[in-house]
Length: 178
Picture 1 (cartoon, one colour):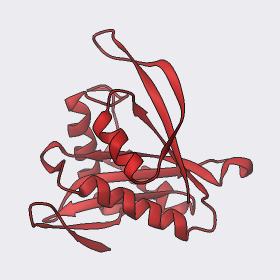
Picture 2 (picture 1 turned 30 degrees about the vertical axis):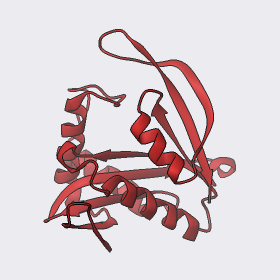
Picture 3 (picture 1 turned 90 degrees about the vertical axis):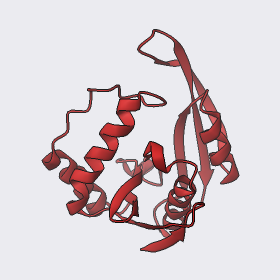
């Protein structure tokens, strides 16, 4: 567990997820998806149960090429970063992550701390060599954060995302070697 100081002076714990976190992680995921911005999964599409979430956490705990970190403030999970590597031997050296931070906790340093924890974990791993992600092309705040950590654009999937209003957005693929 790593304790960090946030921009507002409060403290947050960055740690690996446990099975007991399932309900809070599910609540966080649903709240972020309900915003509907920068998410592939639309509101109402995530039909996970607590049991499903426990299985999801368990897969990360069991797989040496996967990790799920949470950010916790005052015993409440306010952010997560989820990394999974490739399942085949020729792809297990690389993987990608997704990250979510609750609306009221953004711009506090939590996203930065979660990425830092992931990259430190990946650098310590004897398996992981490449960390990737995909990001909506219009999510400039996230793209700038990733670039600060040394991620580079690897490619662009044109009109990959179709929003509920029918508008298309490109999806940018980024990577960093560790």
